[in-house]
Structure formats: C-alpha cells, structure tokens
Image (tube, rainbow, N blue to C red; front, top):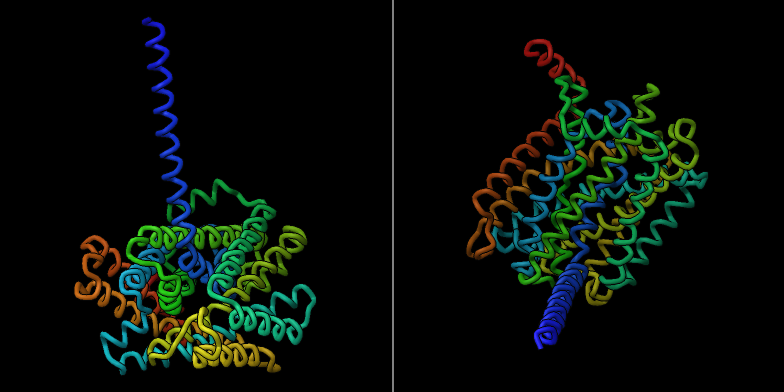
Length: 449
C-alpha cells in the first residue's frame, strides 16, 4: 500500500512538473512572439546608421589608429540607446510622430525650422548614400551610370508599391547583410586579444587627429533623422503602451547590433591597413580596394558588398524620414500603409528626394566629397536642436504621464546629449576650418600634456 501511494505521489509530482514546464514554455513563446511583432523600427534605424559616410569614418578610424578607438564604442552604444529609447517611448505613449509633437507643443515656427533643416540635410545625406552605391558598384566593375539609376528605381518601387509590413521585412533582411563585415574581419586575421583589451581599457591620445576622429565617430553614429524615423516607425506599427517593454528591447538590440558591426569594421581595417602602414584611407571604397592584396579578394568583395547594402538601405530610409518630418509637420497624410492617392504629398516628396539625390551623383565631376562634409556639418547643426526638443517633450507629464524620464535617466540623457552637442560642434568647426582645429589641438597638446 505504501509503495502504491509512493508511486501515485511520484506520478502526480511528475505531472505537475510537466504542467509547470508547459506553462513556462508557453509563457516564453508568448513573450518571444510579442517581441517579434514589435521588433523592427529600433533594429532598422540603428543599423541604417552604418551608412556610406559612417563606414568611411569607421574605416579611417581603423586604418589610422588601429584598435585604439574601440573603447569609444561602449559609451557610444549607451548614447545611441538613450537618445533612441526616448523617441520610442514618445511614439508608443502618444501615438504621434516627433514632428507632429513639435508642431503641437511648440508651434509652427519651430516646426518650420525643423522641416527646412530636414529637407536640406537629408538631401545631402541621400546624395552621399547614392555616392556609396556608385563607389561599391565601381569596385565590382559596374558603371555608376548603370548602378545608380537601377538602385533609385528599385528603392522607389519598393517604397511606393510595398506596404509597411513588406518594406519592414525587406529592411530587416538587409540588416542581416551587415554580417559581410564580420566575415571580412575574420578573413583579415586580427589580433583578437588586443582588440578585446582596447575595447574595455581605453587608450587615450590628446592630439588633434585622434580627437577629431573620435568626434567624427560620434557625429556619424548619432544623426537627427534617426529620431524622426524611429518614432514614426513605432506609430505606423501601432505599438501601444502595453508593448513598451518590447519596443525598448527592440531599441536596445538595435543599438548593440549597430555597434557590433562598427567593431568589426574597425577591427578589419586595423588588422590590415593599419598594420601595413596604409593610414591615409579617405573612403570606404579605398578601404575595400586596399583589402584585396592584404586579406584576399573575398575580404575586399565582402567589404564592398557591405558598402553597397548599407548605401541602398540608407538611400531608402533617409528620404522616408524626411517625408515623415515634413508631412507630419504640415498635417498631411504620411506612412507606407497609405496609397499614393491617399498621401500624394508624402510620396511626391519621397520621389523628388530620390530623383535629385541620384541625379546629383550622375553629374560629371560633382563635388561629392564636399557634399558629404556639408551633410555632416548639417547633421551637427541640427542635432542639438532636435535633442533639446526631445528632452523637453519627454519630461512633459501632461504629455507622457508616468512615462516621463526618471531622475537617473535624465542625468544620463542630458549628460550624453551635452557631450554629443559639444562633439558635433567641434566636428562642424574642424570641418569648416580644419587648419585652425589642427593648430588648436597642437597648442593644447604642447601646453597641457
């Protein structure tokens, strides 16, 4: 009898344990499903940061300074996450885009400045992206007069005829193609121990070129257009306050994955170009070409493919961001789930940016390098204004309710924002007056270090 009772109790215990395991499995399946339903805007926005201009900057950082700037990726990840998380939270809680909120809370004059800045800066950025398409295709022996028009048509067809869900899925697939940089880095056979050491233990140099490159890394990683596109993305997906935790996780995953790709780009160029004394790389195209004799044909082609993917990706997103900013600011219909007839201003503006951006790249002897510099300067001027708008809005209790920033988050957000503002202003100054910047850096080094 005791044996039978023991067996019965054991079976009951196993059944209960099985039920608990089933419940836990069901719980985690639901959580994963909810996350996958929300994921998209954060992952896409962060990875588009690795565009043609960004890849050129990261390549230069690895070629010129080896592994010594890897430590900066950790604070940059924090700054990227903090700034994007606030926009995600505003979009989820209010159900409105950033430009919409600026117009409602600050009036049309402020919105008009934001719209004009978005139009000109993003136009320059779009030219820079199509320039990246041209450079990548020329490495693959395809003329820009073929590749750029084809890229512009493909991008336009995708956005105009695709729904938000279809476009987002394609963009998420494009995020996966950044893995080509990971493969390039492994083919370069870097010193992984040294790279890991430089990632966690800073090596600081107080000279003008080093500080300017550090500033350039921050300036190219965090751009104003991101905030508008990210917030519009969560609004368009109709993500509500109940899904806020999953939206926040999407932004966190996006920020980390973005910086992981930056890590591998710098490592790849440090292990090849820097080691062999090729420190004067001025573009991602030069980096890809220089990799071929050093790390093999596949490393160079993978690097070039990554540049092509990044440029196409960004050429799709940047005009979308601009169209959202202007149409939200003017109160017009906007969004990929609208047809052309329902949102003519949105799609017409998107089309115009694609046509003009691609057209400028096809002009013989167009000053593409100057346009890239001016786009960075424009981002630097625009960034402080947008960050201040975000920080004021996110702390409005009448707007955000219990989702305003905590004291700790405000300290982190304001500190990160002030540092980003200072660094972007330095970048503007040194871009416009590089000689003065170099002399100032030399003076500081000479008299204080």
